[in-house]
Length: 582
Ligand code: C2O
Image (cartoon, rainbow, N blue to C red; front, side):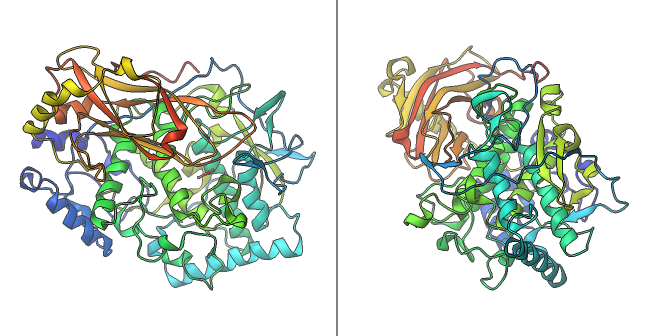
């Protein structure tokens, strides 16, 4: 057990995690006894997780072994030569699914663009608190700020600081009204690439400053939805009060109140809260740690001047991030809400105040990831990333131009996150039993070889034999190539390795390798193909395939499988490809 703990400790430098601490985080501090792991096979873990739902720091004896699964993005893009640049002048029709939308979400234009300089960081950083823990006084301030922002829509609908104008910023950068400067027909798109984290960080930054200025409080900070902790795994109550300006009626009524979020959302959800919470912790651990063996796998693929939009999502974007959008958005499919509004479609997501709280935690994941002390974590150094630009309106309604380079360090932007324990940091699934492995190997004769079935549409679960790149103790990754899907639909599949089960509800199993999920969005550019790779290094440790020369890969469609076609499935040596070449 000692070595499991040691390997977990490698992943966190507790003292560095946040500047505003109330607890120390480390797997050491969790004081897990080795018996918990050896004997409980998860049972004790789950009970503690449930206690956590009651508001305690329940996951305290979830011990870890960073199991391995790694999702990655493989860039289709040629080498970049220049960063991407937006132009508000060049803004037209927005789309959802296949339809041009009957709304104009272009921000007001202006010839007066100011190159933004970050103000000197305040003496005391603005502290973003977990939304389920905020006090009365804070709630009153926050509600007042959002109320005033909504007021602006009435007094001056063209005020760029107004609530709808702010929501439209998201539509403008996501649903295809913009083209890249100098590239007719190529969208400026901030999802599915390495711009995902930086864009949303800047977006929240200005939104937060606008709210603060409306109530005359420069210390005002947005709350974050702590959905990665069992205590925060329901909709934060402050957003669920119909009398509050933070409320939005266009949400899924089944997912209010005490409903537990599903970070691995599919339309057929596990009904058992225990399974949900365990799956959630497992999903977090996968997308933040075990699945990631290089920076771009987490951040997203390179996207620059002249690139095709949507080169590939990072693990967090396509995992927990997508899941929350879909989980909250309405499913009513009436004419008025046929695109899963509000959170379930990018054009309308910003109309729900909860969006900014959700993205607070998404942003916090970038912060946590940068603090994880793993050899694979390295900030992107390419000038094509650092010099990528966005335009926003600031709290004084000035049009400003910002650069990615200025948002990498959030403290320079003047804010931090209130520390919360990170229960998934050291989470690990139960190990596969030896007999299970023996059983699957016996069954192998009825499983087709991968070469015989490709390309394949995910109408049903796909189970294929895939040759390993080498025998013995090797580090390998599973590459799923040419994933062609309908971008206008909610798409999702999960991947398992050497899994002999037919029941894929529980994800906290050694055989779970990773996921692919996409929020529906339509832009002018047609279907995209992308690839992911899932690191298997640590998964192999758990299921022991050292002596085998093939593994069994199972792909389980979770949503709209008939609209997903997979062109290639192969195993290659693991790489920690550097990001410096883009
Ligand atoms: Cu820009 Cu969560 O979306």
